[in-house]
Image (cartoon, rainbow, N blue to C red; front, side, top):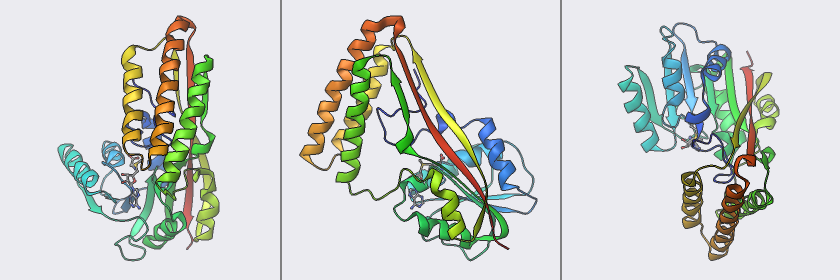
Length: 280
Ligand SMILES: C[S@@+](CC[C@H](N)C(=O)[O-])C[C@H]1O[C@@H](n2cnc3c(N)ncnc32)[C@H](O)[C@@H]1O
């Protein structure tokens, strides 16, 4: 059973775009980036090139897409995947906070679910403004992971959700992760501070609903993801919190099983797509 977002396995929307990225989202990006023939468009934190593949399917003529990401392995997958789709995309390894491009060389710049992982968001947005030409669009799509909604029809589900929040909070803190996972709604203010006029904010809900007891494989997958996070926890104290959380998940699985067709789990998170225009 695929689950599009899962607060039980991750504190962010990390690695899950392929599950929620749909045609409506691609159309939104293309409409707001306003690509014209001859344009150069930069995707910061492109990951494995999902945006490039989706935009490439629209066969927009004579635009040049460039994707950069901090992780070389992802850039290599993006290069391979787009080549397999006969698309010409420029890929490079680069840090959003120090983009290796001259000023104003892109007609528009965008990022999806990237700033939530960056410690110095202001520096990154300053870089977006610097490399984008005057009058060009800047689009950033980010969540507010503090505002995730979770409903479970079982008491054990609600307890497991609390245990999950505690585990991921402790894990993030023990890793010294300075990133702001709540950056989504703050983007217009950040744009404004860097000479990018905020034009609009569109909200994209990303939701998932489970009705009736999920199969055992669902719980095995959920627990395997959590176990992976526990393995990477830097301290014994956080690993102990993780194991308590695993016990809470086991109890949740048992109650869900007992509830049968009356079982319900609903999750929702919101993406804030901020569109701005670099001042002339
Ligand atoms: C959640 S993924 C999103 C990937 C892609 N935008 C998508 O929507 O499929 C976040 C990406 O941001 C990249 N990233 C994180 N920090 C970065 C930084 N400082 N500079 C560039 N990329 C970064 C990660 O390597 C990862 O590929």
